[in-house]
Image (cartoon, rainbow, N blue to C red; front, side, top):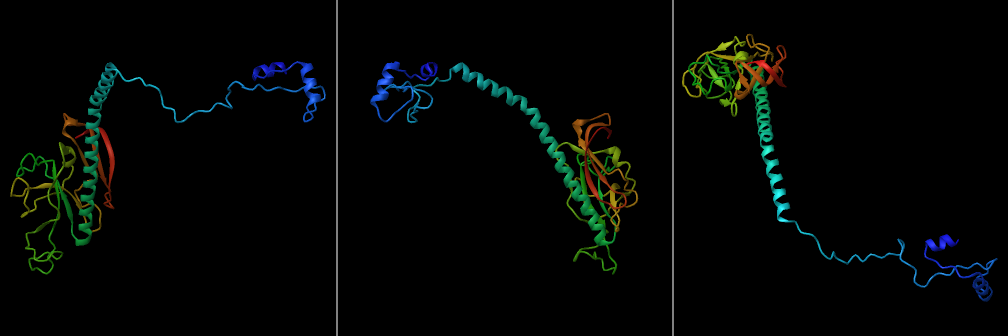
Length: 269
């Protein structure tokens, strides 16, 4: 009892005093006269400490010039280190966006073949397309199909007021962004080369034979279109005919369905 009283700051009176107070106080009757006397001003404890929330800190320590310069230096170092990462991310996003656009173009050619009842093509000028300037070879593409003129009135059956040139360009000429280019090795496997007379080409007005990926009216690949799909990469990633990193698009031979299959490494280009 004495130990607990000291621990909590209480004071125990002498036994004689407790007995006297016990007999004098009719409100408290304890068998052996034990009564605890609480001090008038008990010491503060965790149960009676009151915090004034309105009090404000008296003072705060400011940053020194050396500390501010150190923070600025760290930010500068991190910014420089992040530049190559952001550049790589930008290139990756560009190739992925191009892949999705190419997938859509191939699907458009397939749909055109099914609806028109004749083959439709994605034409891809390669290095052998001599009538097109070098800046557009291996980088441009377009969708076209031959005209369907069953009633011999020099009009395409699926377009009105259109003179009969033999071919219809179903899209404008598109160009891969940046330094992306198609695989020359992959385009040589496309043995179905066509010469769309009357179709204008970027950089030159005359047509020449170009490799194509063609679709038949049944939706599958046309003869000579191959089954290896398309491969394209950044010219900076190509060394001695080998692409360190390239994007690949596959086409099913029989169904003609197109899908982007991701990145391949160290492949013939």
